[in-house]
Length: 313
Image 1 (cartoon, rainbow, N blue to C red):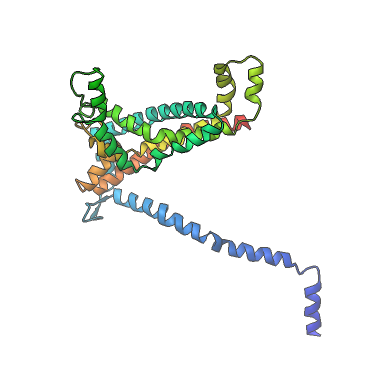
Image 2 (cartoon, helix red, strand yellow):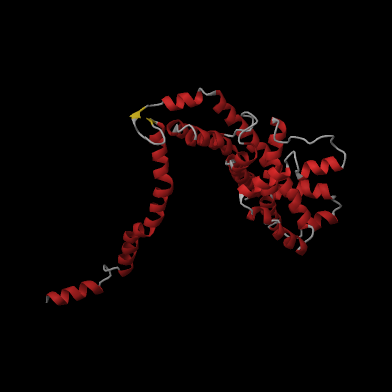
């Protein structure tokens, strides 16, 4: 009789096999997410917690966590005029260079887009600067900009544009221009590829219809093409802005922060503070301040991108 009742229970509508399967999947879901959670903990959460703890301590490179320091490192960082100046320089350079490179990349992408199939072939050639290690880019441009025997100075002298070699890395303005030029050469092809992809996603026939209505090239770009790719352009600008905040290699190779401290970016300043002066606790505090500043600068761009996406939707 007991076996009969058990068999009847399995065949009644109350026994839901699909429900048990859903319950099993629900119980196994944490196991599926475990690798991702572990990766996030190892690569994000642990370094962040370690950095916060380091910034609140009295630490050196060889002797970390010697004593609790509270907010002293943050006070020292915010009271350091050179650190504040490096923040302003880094933000100004990131915004200006990103805007210039997005504009140059869009112009290059528009030029290649008109070549249709040829544009795709030429665009693949622009990947060469991206394949070059940043350190090699810095070394190459340092040789190009060298006062004695440099390619650029030699060309200017042969053309009679200058009477004597120019020290491109010897003054603040020319040093920043040199860094920006090398950065432009390295990253504009990447921006052009992204802009080319945005142009390729435009609806077919819109430009032709505008041309038939008598719209000129500038009107078609300003009133049709640009509004349609505004959201992707905002995303591209955000990506390049984040890359610009990470500027270190070119500064290290070309100017080493000089002349004086004229081209010392925040990343390079933190590097010297931690690896040369061994003040890792204060360097950790400056890193967190810099990260907060990056968030404040990029937040309006993120909101602009979302607003443009909602408008298109």
